[in-house]
Amino acid sequence: MLVSSSTGRALSMKRYTRMALIRPSIDRARGVLRAEAPGMDPLEVPLARPKASELGACGLPTPPLSEDGHGSECGSEWGGGAAPQATTMCSTTVLSQRFSALADAWFTSFLNPPSSSSSSSASSAGPGPVELHRLPPGTSRHAHFDGASAGPPLPLRLSNESPFLLVSGESLRAVERSIGERAADGAAAAAAVVHSSAFRPNLVVEGAAGEALEPWWEDDIEALNVGAGNNVFSFLGRCRRCLMVSIDQVRSALPSPSLSLSLSSSTADAPSCAQATGARTAEPLATLSLTRKNAINGRVEFGAHMLWRDELGGEEEAQYVRVGDEVQVRLRS
Image (tube, rainbow, N blue to C red; front, side, top):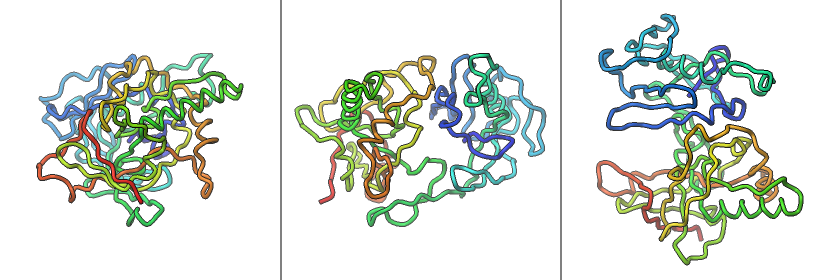
């Protein structure tokens, strides 16, 4: 997570929308986390502490040696000896460690661009000095879900509210149609394509060809199996939506429906990060607030929180889900 050096609070894309332009990825073969952003040289952060000789050139000046032992050169002190400190994330406090002075400099540089007359308002101001933090081993937060099927508080690390989030192509297109209808009635300026990336899901599921699935069927999931490895996921609860869904992540069309009820790609047809805007938009939250507000608790809901049930899975040592995997769904009766 990214943390403000001055406040000790985790940054939120809802306030600092430029975060939407950062594209992280994990290179498992090389053991690095890679971050890319417009106008920046890529940043690579090792997932394990490497030797200094294994790291390449920084491409950015880094801060001097800090009190917690972070080095000022590329190869020194990647997240090893920093003392844990209290950090506020959403409404909870967790212990976290600074990870790397190089990463701090990279994120600080990108999130605090030179001001201009067109972007000098308080809403576009940067967060100031930023630090990249990770949770120490053994540290976790806990998520709470309503309903009998939710079970006890769920231990998390830095997942938002649950380990996995699922949305369906049918529900995405239903929102898109509702936006179009409102636009035709003059309630919205224009219809917009609703891309799954706005909801930041891990799993995007499409119905089988010729199978007429109703929107919002994912609200009634009890469990689902994904792929030949028999990966089992159980339902935790519906996902509350907020201003985050109206920050432009990517401009692209929906994936084409797949040939069976299967995982669909939310990123295969996405343009590069330079084509995303990170701008706040009215949709899709405006339409969701009218069509998907829970009458009991007033929450705007879209998507399903899911938990991977490793004890119910196959016997493979490593479990994978892949784009195109067939999905078998069991709905609540």
